[in-house]
Length: 340
Ligand SMILES: Cc1ncc(COP(=O)(O)O)c(C=O)c1O
Image (cartoon, rainbow, N blue to C red; front, side, top):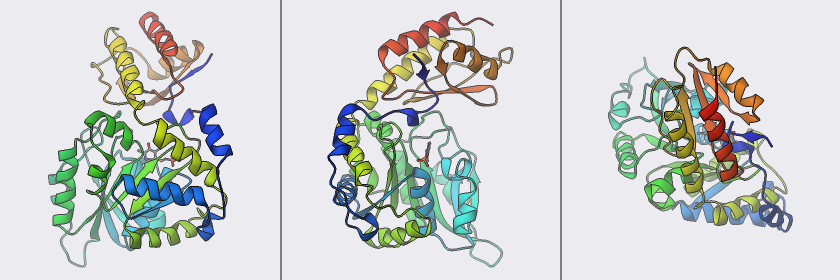
């Protein structure tokens, strides 16, 4: 049995999810005639207190469509330097939106309100117009770190005080919500747009949704078409997402406690430079200099455990729907006994 901790995107649909997909009613979504997609967009928008939603194949597309819709060429986007929209989306902001990026050196992927205020450009011909703030919650390269509700509120207030838009990359927002005990609505109202992924912790094969005002989503729908993201009978995928919203949210806590158990085991070994904590389902730990992350990944692979070396002698492990207690015990046993 291979235990795959490389990402929470590796999950396969459960039999019940597949059943929901197989019985989905579908139509042509480019004509807005797919009942399952229309239902998903309505449900997700309602949950997050938004007027409308737009189903897309990926979180990269929902983020990039959002940025394109919020900006004009020669605008600037404020974002933390390790956040997905900048670090992992292939230069998409420059390519799609012809906008520049003001990078913030944050704390495990998170920024502070003062980072926004201090990085707004003066309004003159020398500078791009600061237009948009993007935050990521939970933060992927931040090792699953998250913002508390009052921290998100403060960021939103600061952005809006300066007439900036603020977009939430909520690829894993439900991982945050189950930790802070907040409702999607309380978070959604703080942002001008929200991207939510179904293909991460929620266990779907494909799909993300972009949420915002009616006018914003109408323009985003046009941009999605230009990006090549207009799908046809994709309601089979939306049905998986509806199923996940109904069945896979509260269980995320289990992923978090398994990540914490791995962290505890690691902290009891002599492998780490500093103790690691698991805030949600992503665990990033740095090995002492005498150990090599690549070698550790290879050693774990020999024991059928997959994870990633992510640079700087760090390793990333992500827990998810297809990782159970039996696998957890096996991982902890291997980590306790790993030899160099
Ligand atoms: C924080 C974050 N945002 C966006 C994405 C993009 O999602 P996708 O792989 O569906 O494009 C990811 C993917 O892992 C992510 O971690």
